[in-house]
Every structure is written in C-alpha cells, then in structure tokens.
Image (tube, rainbow, N blue to C red; front, side):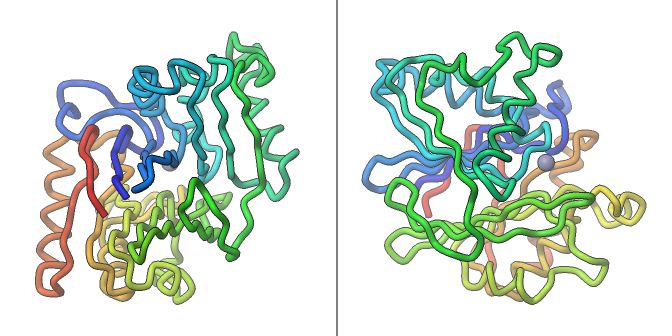
Length: 280
Ligand SMILES: [Zn+2]
C-alpha cells in the first residue's frame, strides 16, 4: 500500500505562512493498492487537490474508479466533495462507505451539504459520475478495491466517527482520526482494533493542556495517540488532524514529544504532511 496525505489539518482549513510546511487542508488521505486500486479516506478540502492530480490519468477520461471511506460528516471531512473534479466526469465510478447506519441516511447527510443555501451544486444528482453510497458495516470485514477493510465506531464529542483498519498482503494501516476517548485514555476495544498495526494514523489534535479545556469537542491529544501506539504495539505512529490554531512550529513540538515517548519502545513516528507518501 502507498499512503499519501492530501489534507492533515483538523476542523477548518488553515492556510497561511505559519502552516505551509505541514499544510492547511482538511482531512484527506489516499491509499494506492499494489494492484493499482485507489481508496480515498475522508473528503476534506485536500480532496480537491487529489482530484486535480487524478484528472491527469483515467479519471480525466471517465475511466476511473475508487472507493471512498468516510469517517463522519463533519465539515472538515466532506467539504472537498463539491470541488472533486472526477465526480463531474461521466463514466467515473465511486463507491462510498460512510456512517449513518443506512445508505439513505448517509445519502441524506451528503445531499444536505449540496442544498442551494450551502452550495451552487444544489444536489448530488448533478454529479456525472456514478456515486453509490453504502452504510459501513461495523466489525465485519468488507472489500475495497482488493483491500480488506474493517470499521469501528468511536466516540467523537456529541457524535461518533469511524476508524478503518485496512489490510493487504499481511500489512496493516489503521486510520483513527477524530477520536474522543474518556479521560482515562484509549479503551481496550480501541487498542484491540489497532493491535499490531504496521502504521497507526491517529488523531493528535491537541497538546494535553488544550485538550483538558476542550474535552467536549471529542479529540485526542498526542498523549492519547502515544498510549494507543504503545498498548497496541503498533510499529509506526502517524500524527494527524492538527488543530487549526497550531503553527508548523507547534506541530513540530507535538511530533518531537511523540518521538521522545515512543523511541524507547522502538515505535517510529511520522508526521502526516501534505504531499508526503508512505509505503506500508
Ligand atoms: Zn475532523
């Protein structure tokens, strides 16, 4: 699997000179399979840039297909959809697995953001590509472009978000963004889901001091991510979903703190940074 980061910021895009190094776009990660398949995780504003890149290949000719895994429908995970060029090309095909419990419920959620009050697109029906929406089964593996995907629902403030465990040929990549654990930290069922992951991409929105005053928002601090990586015996932690108010220098501090804690355990730390690619 090749994982690439198109948007790594949390909550709202944060472009500007202080966020240039890690990037200001919101959540979007692509996974290219060893057989040429494409899985996209989350549709934050980074999706626009992924879409523009894809237009140079089969998607530009209406011959592309991909599976999209949607963790939840907060703005920073869906706002790229209306600007994703491949959905306006007839012949392209997208299979979307997301939250909501039923395909109709998820379609209603996504349709809501196309309402003329929010978007000139008016309705999902204006997409030219096939855009099939499915409710993600929990705890039961399903196929996505040849990858084995298992989903788990975790608390996220007043709602929930899905985490995805993605496996190919014995290698595993876990995507766990927007995770609001109880104050005691990662729960045993979450650890079990992350168990032995080659790469654990985990919410590191906050430093502990800021998390303490914003518990109701349902995000992790880097200490939660570190605890999860150690307990689950992950081989690598990827930091992700940085708070919109954090500069690149602030993110550097988060990454350095993770490294200090994980080096003694032999767990690598890789910060998610727009444009970077990771072989898993
Ligand atoms: Zn988010």
